[in-house]
Image (cartoon, rainbow, N blue to C red; front, side, top):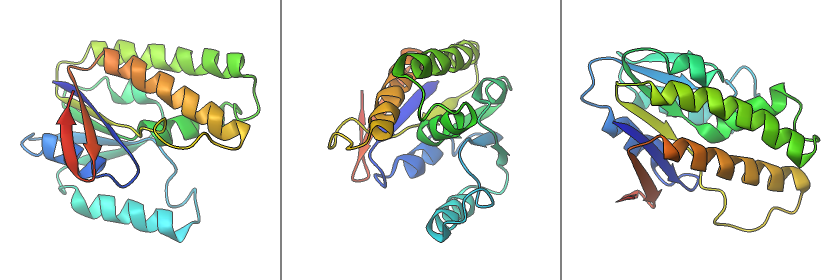
Length: 175
């Protein structure tokens, strides 16, 4: 089963995604965003620590934004989350000031690799993402670019998933 879990910030997405894999013997947890060492923000470090404490000790953690490679294993995989993945890729590829067309082209290339890997998976796979298109239009170009690219990523990934779960206020709607 391949499931995309989406919703707003602090909606309960990660907790729900973790429960979807709770019966798996072995899970690889892929953290594609900044680590506590990368980001000196104490709130970010606290959030990462809380996520680590909640996961079973038997889960293996990989910190990488190379999702295509992380999805090539044969055990259950959870990716948390596509928003932090996108941020890492935009940083690595210097896309924040790139033209929209150039940014879309680069991200589309990465998404092609990810969806090919996702399509070939037979083990349970859960991907978490943020639903950023439900709120205010960002005031800055970089915010609008991020919103648009994450919307593109969410649509492409959802095409290769069996289900999409929308989490709002800790409640789950299966789409």
